[in-house]
Image (cartoon, rainbow, N blue to C red; front, side, top):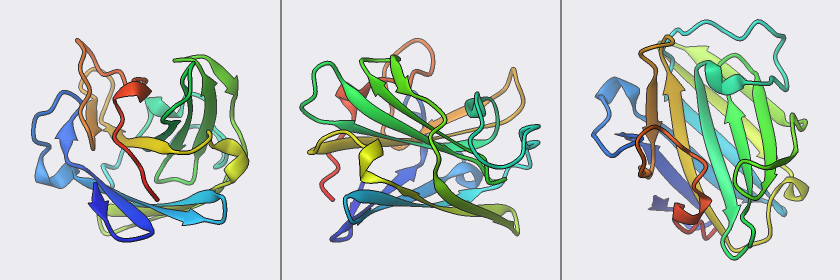
Length: 178
């Protein structure tokens, strides 16, 4: 995580289990405070995966497509409270709020999100309202997923343990002091 004052940059440059990502896979996510909420800026390679079959907007099961994900958790919450924000290069998004690991209490929340694809990369900008986020202080992690079923690539800013990719480990996310 890179400290830039009122923002933090997370470099998604490792596989989920800690191996170095290929240079053509590295994505960056910048998180900035916006009022009580958070602005998320994505700069990522575009892997030319097909888009979801739905129109851009809230899209269930978005993790099955090319996506960058940001998890923001309340550092002191028990049970864990966290928000998962999934963003696609085609303008689709999925915002889920959890109370307890993998226990969603809100699904497919609306989000101000735009995405553009250009020259083998994509960029996106989302503004996550404060009401979607857990109480501060926050912890966070970011991930990227791409590739065809059977050979999907799961990348992380901060790798997580386990026998298979499991991003729902909010107790292991580093501090997000923005």
